[in-house]
Image (cartoon, rainbow, N blue to C red; front, side):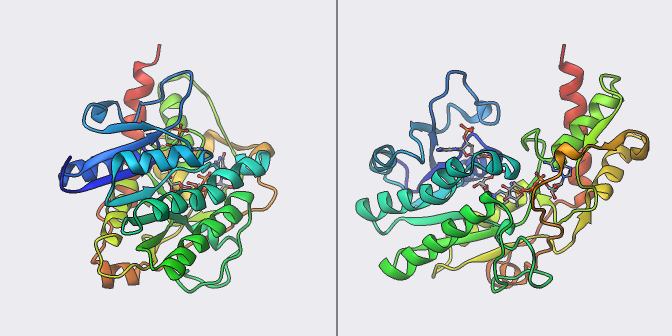
Length: 323
Ligand code: NAP
Ligand code: F7E
């Protein structure tokens, strides 16, 4: 066993794969929790599959979390596992609550009863702010979630703080604003757009159907954001941090940048389809990362334009490979 061991839930997801790479580079023994499925979904971790230890478990199953903690004996646990797609949380609000809310308590209980010295990171989100009470949003901005996902994350956030205060555990919540990459799931708007651009450019599609084009998000690059998760757990005392770029843009602007990067005019291809509108929308999010800058020394390195170009470039390659 190595000197530093970390357990990552959600290792097969976008952030889990970047965080696992980051921790491996720093010499950690990395353990990842994976849930059983009838087809393997290791696309994002195939290149590091032999370097990490994969443990079978589920945030719905208390015993499996206990076994995972006992097996990995981690110094740090990063809870990135969640039902993370906002529209799916209206279709499956109870499942979302079980995984995204109660799953956090299950994991904290497994840690508390095994080794309360373990440092814990909870993946909180800008969706806590929802219908924003002030702008930009900071660590002290009141919450007003707008989806079953957001409501579940409010529980996960407060139970993390409550375990810190009740049991003196080293537990941090990172309030991360949207972060994207070529590994983003295809259903999220950023990747839906860059994949759509690639399919249109290759002649596979002629239009792209989207929902609310006026929504504004503070988009950063996932590779930069996972670094902040690790930085939070290296502090002397546990605390909560907003991680954001400090700039917001509309979905239209994302389209303009993505289509523009391959010389296309987005307005010729994008159409609004009401099926993609939400029952309650988060209209605008913009984070203030000054505490993270001051205390952690964290700064984003990849710009919005670089990230969009990176995503379109990768999707151009992937679509070219599709039969
Ligand atoms: P993602 O790509 O959707 O990955 C979610 C991960 O959770 C996957 O590995 C998934 O496993 C796993 N998972 C789902 N249900 C589970 C269960 N019952 N038990 C164990 N694992 C389960 O999400 P992401 O974008 O990487 O985000 C990582 C975390 O940060 C999530 O908690 C998300 O809510 C939060 N967050 C994301 C953002 C963002 O902009 N990306 C911002 C703030 C917070 P499968 O592969 O088996 O489905
Ligand atoms: O939507 C609008 C949509 O699904 C962004 C998750 O990682 O970040 C993510 O949640 C905006 C919304 O991300 C489409 O209405 C327009 O206003 O990419 P998204 P999200 O809902 O912000 C937060 C921080 C998380 O924590 C979540 O886990 O884009 N939008 N048209 C669309 N969105 C989608 N998905 N599809 C559209 O066609």
